[in-house]
Length: 347
Image (tube, rainbow, N blue to C red):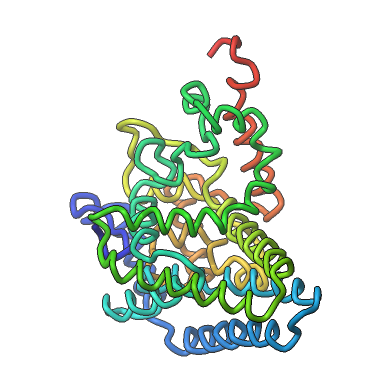
């Protein structure tokens, strides 16, 4: 299995290609250089808030006010997950070993199997929004195209009819799904460092549940888990939903060159510093997919270069506001489920 989520174009596509010319412009602007100072501050702040959140749970103790801390920790868990993402892409450290160690530590902090997620995310980056090749388009609960809707059975068939309306409520389960998928992946013998991931996952859940049951009455502990994991799932889903949902879906041999494959299937979200922090730089999704190892604080500067270059090539560059991005994603989901609402309608 892969150990690096840095996706590079095949050599046949790189030399003298449209992407190669863009890459030279980006490199000349110094945007691929590491930002150790930025990441030192970001990691320190997020780690302090993580520890501080759990300290607040201990200090508040047997009080329903702890549920407000659960909401706070849901956001911090999302920020830790974003750090794991950046580390896996070698945005933080250039060396593979340091990147893997830091990414695994951050992943463990939110109850995620780093090896499972890394493999899944690498395949997504190689073929974003490809119906057969992108694991993020697997119809395990939702259907992403009308072809998937026609073939759907079980829960996807039941949910798919009204999935656009159910999308955000279902995100409350995404945190739990992350944990369950991580645990299920441990049965895969091809998972690299499977024993290590399993040990770290069991340790995380043991400490998490023991701490809550020690500090809170059982009923309050269950409520804390529901609020914490539910809001964590909503935050995670809200981070990734604007990026590709509602963008063109590729099928079969429909695989444009590397630059177009990444640009045409991705959407940027407009915003300022707060948007960059809240979405962890993933609001610059086009630039991130073109240059996965680019440190997230450099993505905003790269946007100007990439957008101008796409205009020169006549390549569509999608960018919307956050609310519009969600509306487009939900519209796409509703359209994908149409065959389930109108099974006798012509294709």
